Structures are given as C-alpha cells and as structure tokens.
Image 1: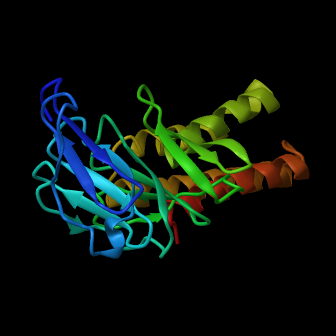
Image 2: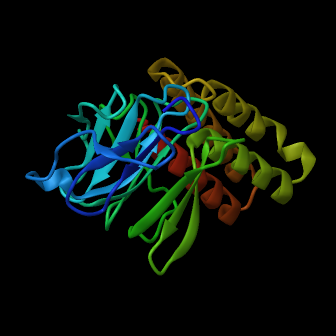
Length: 244
C-alpha cells in the first residue's frame, strides 16, 4: 500500500477485495466475502494520508472500512439509505471527510470517517449518481456524475457563501453591498473549520444577513425579486448547515 508496487482492487462481482504487493503479478483475497451479500463490492477508496485505511461501497450493505490494509472490515453506514453505493471519494486534505454516491439517493457526506452520513444533495436534481470527485485544490467543491443527467457541482455551505457574495457584487451597486457581504464573509470564515460551535455561529450570521435583506427590501434599496432570491440562497445555506 505504501510502495509503488502495492495495489488494492475492489470487484463488482462475488469475491470481495483482492490485494497485490508485487505490482499486480499476483493477488490474494484480503477478506472472504463470497458467502455474504456485501461480497458485491462496488467502489473502493484509499485514504491518501493513511493508505492502510480503505473504504468499499457495496450493492446491499452500505460502506465498509478497513484500517489494516484490508485484512479486516467493519460496517460504517449509519445514515446511509439501503441503496447501492456506486461511488466513493475522500477529501485529500481532510481524509475523515468522505462522499458516497448512491443509486437513486444522490450523494451522502461523512465528516467522521464513515461513522455517520447525511444527505449532501443541494442543487443535485438527478439522484442516480455514478461517480463522485473531490476537487483536490478546493476540496469544498464536489462533482457528481449522474446517469443521464450530466455532471453536477455541489458546493459546501462555505463555498455557497462565497458564491452568494459574488452574486451580490454582480447584481447590486457598491453602496448596497457592504452590509450584506459582511455577515456572509463571517459565515465563510467560520466554516473553514468544521465544528458544531462554528456552524451555530454561522447560523447566527445568516440570520443577520436575512435581517439586512429584509430591511433593504422595506427601504426600497433592493427589489422584491432581488430580496426573494437572496433569502432563497441564504435558505439553501441554512438548510445545508441544519440551522434551526
């Protein structure tokens, strides 16, 4: 796993996971899944910082994790639907952040190495996901390839905040931007570190942003259509954060 000749592969067919330590010249089963439903292995992902940690997606039993190069496995599927896992991707900078693509369920995200999962589908209109890729230079941006629906870009709340700031700059005159951009800048800063305290603080700043939008709508500084769009965009971020 840590040398150029070490390889691990997952199979879509009965047999489980096989491992080679000689560049593929020979292989051995590192776990016997032949008699189990989760022998139908789909995607396999390797932790880029700790290569002995592997994840496999299955057709019927969610995601399994190994921390010893595939010699043993444990289920890490809390929160995943009972659907085939078709894709796995790991955040290269924070490998405890994982993404799982599913058949008919869209994309799910874990921030604790697979121990728990939640839906990550903001903006994703086709839930038949075939592939998931994390942008290596900006891991908060995730790409989902779908069956018949093309490729979607899924932004995390931090990226969505930055995107909303850019939209404000394009659509409003400079004198109307500052009081709206300020709270969003604070949201983006808070969300650079994922922890519950920062998420709660970000929710508060989003409330402040919406208050500013409402005030500007009442004073006529923004139109009703502009205010509605800004509230909708902010609502998407609060929903992704799980704000009360």
